[in-house]
Image (cartoon, rainbow, N blue to C red; front, side, top):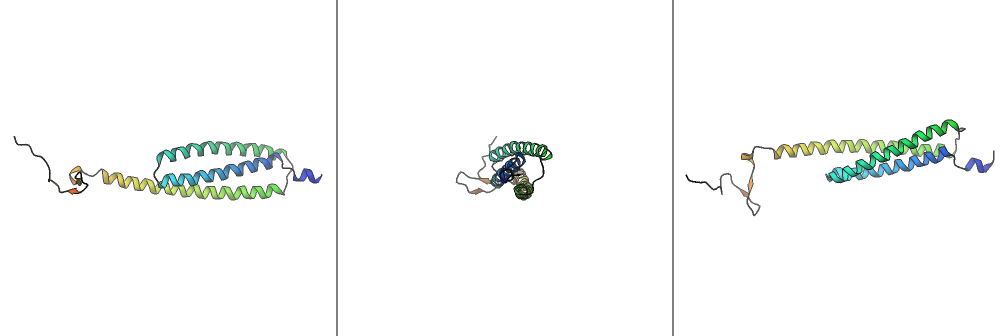
Length: 147
């Protein structure tokens, strides 16, 4: 076997590299998702979710092609091992980010539910405000009709 054939990346090597690139792009989307969650930007969150879904489809396609290709190639332990180790590390980091985002979403939901409960109080207990933004005591400023 020549030195050239040993250093030329195989189809599997290129697929693993492609998966790594997609996984790193997915991590970037997870970081963008964190910003959307923290700022309660539902438009940005929806956009990120759509792009994540598309990227996951691409990652699954790479993985399926890689599995098919690996079964038809002779095993190599040089560059592929290094690239696969990087891919495994990226998968671990992606999983960590995804779990963190799930926790952020849970916290955001709790916050929104609490805020919603406060807004849904009985109207008679809600403070009224004047056009100047100052609180108006209950019953003050109400117009009563005689009749």
